[in-house]
Length: 338
Image (cartoon, rainbow, N blue to C red):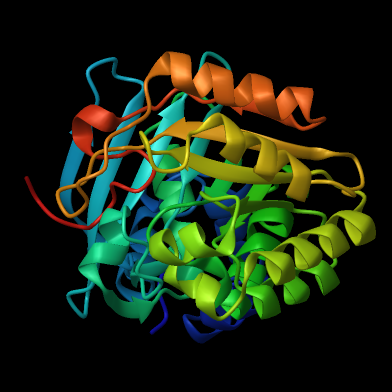
């Protein structure tokens, strides 16, 4: 289906020609929608009658089912509904001088990570390139700060929809003007997708969700580990770092009494050796979900875990959760109304 943000300049040129309009209108439309990041209705250099025709020819992919704003007004979440009924969520995080958008790459997720609300809900379908790009630009319309970062950490496993994610990164870089280094693709360890990303021209940031220092525990938390065990995932991450010259980030949801013990920190540090530029671990307190009984680690235990990683030569950062009051934090997206 052709939607507003699915078309590139040559396709817009064909559409404008079909409508019998001057060729320069395609450039105005492309510049306004993508580089200037303005809604179609705000493109006042295009005649109102043509804008009305374009709205019909280029419908939005999503209708808004719900918008939620966190207590501090800096984190917003949209629940969108596509024409086929599929629902996905997008999160906008605003800072003083910039903004980050967390986009979904699938409706639902087939990975089945036990502590993740999206995985608990199951898989519906892949998203298209236009649907991914639309999430970024419609979030931009709601943000006074310029969106400078996009993270593929919303609903779905990005590297289970690799073609779309790679094409979306290209579009966001070339058409929207976001630096490739400010595009982050997260994965739970889909090794073939990591290899595809290694061969991709753009030096995007790779983030690997580990959550455990050994295969036995990781298989309980991340079922995909049975197919792609830790050694294979880390080898693929090392190859990415070597080829791109970029530091790889590792995500680690800290679950009280499950994966946050001192000896587990030591084991994790031992596995994260040999990375070009070093390895960096983001420690994130588990976000509560209805389908998982685990509890987040307390601040002292996470701090001790971070200290053990640093003592083992691994950089570690303790992340502050944002959007928990509206179920917008990592692992909480599941496309539902309260």
